[in-house]
Length: 132
Image 1: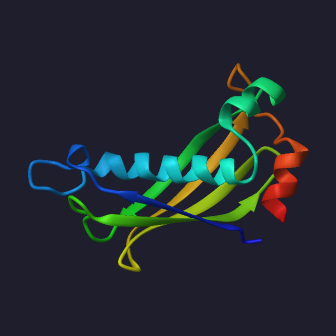
Image 2 (image 1 turned 45 degrees about the vertical axis):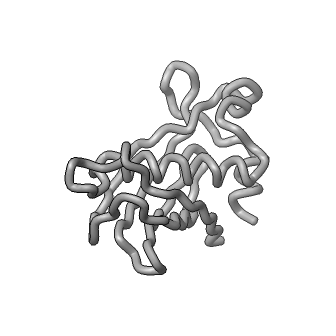
């Protein structure tokens, strides 16, 4: 640890407001895509985690700071870094960069829950991958 994952996204017109600036809620979508790709890169999918382990990974909390605006046609790089994990959750720091400059930072706390929404243990295989 810490484990880092990289993901890139291009800003499309649909991501922006009338001024060509990324609408604030769309940063959360970019971050979600990056986290999903991080999980995929470890050999897991969200649907597989539900089907085989009976868990969903949900966002418990997210603190995001917008430093500079992203704009139409920007290429953004998202770095997702595992900060810590427990038996049932983990925390990621996610940074959105444009031209190697941080434009947004988020701390995201993810929790494994069962189908009833109750906290559940992370699968051992996932914990091992997160810890390597």
